[in-house]
Length: 634
Image (cartoon, rainbow, N blue to C red; front, top):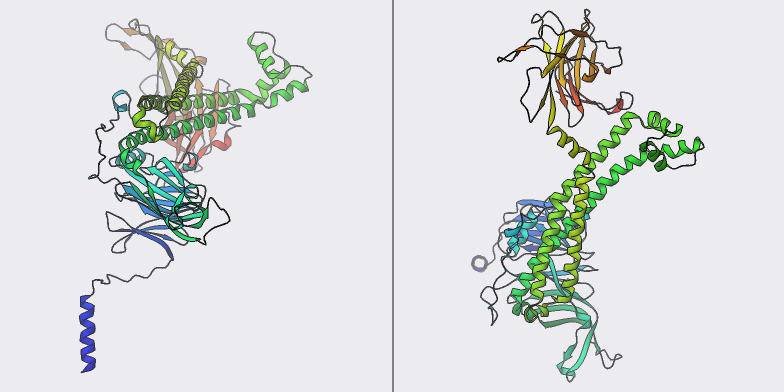
């Protein structure tokens, strides 16, 4: 009977308890920190090896990240969209709750961050004199959207502090965070507490080792903490009070030898009402400064990529021209490379050293490769300047001008550290940067693209169109032929009846033309296949012809039908052993089509073995044999 009563009492007690076990899951790792999301049923955990795991309430894991640093503290943003991680080396890492991607890296401390607290302004609490108008971002009226990080050539996130894979999320993150005023507090092992508005803009720092502390029990004597380390920080919802738990030793500032034996844990209660009384001003300045900070990173990344692009081109240039000084010295000539080329430009006689270098060491292929590298670097640099660097500098200048205007409102903004004299110096510096970027943009447009612009200007008045095609057998008197038609015209006058000319090219009987394509600079690429009468596969050839080496014949037509006859064109015989074009042997039987890219300078050939062979057209065969690409087409 006693046992039954004890069982009933135990059952009743279990039913009355407010805590119920939802599930029991084994964890194959050691957890050292965990924090629930303030808005959603999400639990963020940090393992002993500093991996961050995010789980739902039902223990479904959403993602796992490894920041690569020792995590010492964790907290959520008030809206639950951002996870803040403090590291052993003083960094605050902000990660997106949706996918765990890095949003921002902020260097707040020089030592380990042992605690974090993210407090948001209570909308019901307002200052007594809240007649200050909210900030309106006016850059959208005068500028296009702010530029993002340039991606040319790749950029690691460590170069800028921004997430390279998620740069589009940065403006959205800043905009969302700015809807309500909030402050991220971080406490360091050295006794320093840092404050960052929206978690990204540092606005203040307190060292509790330097704060005077009045102890009532000692007759209101002034004491000071020594070797203090912050253990916990908590900012009130109205942002007016800060509670600190710290370890340290109280020292009497009047009698340093007397320490009252008060070493241990202490609680400090500090006045932070400036955040409450000046939150409108802080909100406005931090929005401007955060945007400027983002744009400064864009400027740094742009300059870094410009340097990288130009250095790459110059390395190739110096590599190719490294042999010239040695040749000059070997010929016993007392001159520099610059003197030799100036002499060549002025029309004087070319020295044997320079002639040997141009004809043998450098060659036409090497010169084309250098020109292509410099031209490519110039295009990339011009794009970086016009799309990233120049817009970023102009928007920075506009935002700094707005901050300079706010700095003149001393009663409002001087108390939060917005100094008018400092703003004058910064405004002058950004103005000089705008001028320098504009000058650089003009130099890039006139020097790097002088040849291209000149050719474009000439081509706008005169052009030559080419049409190349295979002649179907039986359509004219000749067989196994190709035809090339040239149309010379002028944009200011109508085409004349005699503007068309052409020629026919007869293929050798043992070859047939598989396909052909016009390339550039009056060049035609032919794809020939050997007619094989045995079971062994035949060989193939790729031939590049210079049309200026062949004579064009005017085509006769009847007005006004504009029908031209090809019957009177004389067919020239193609000789593969002649020296009027490039000939390359292809060790495969080829098929249509022949794909030629004039912009890339390559040709793609398809073989009967389901391979794609990519050839560089502007190089000599002996120099680029290893650069031919072959890819399977399975």
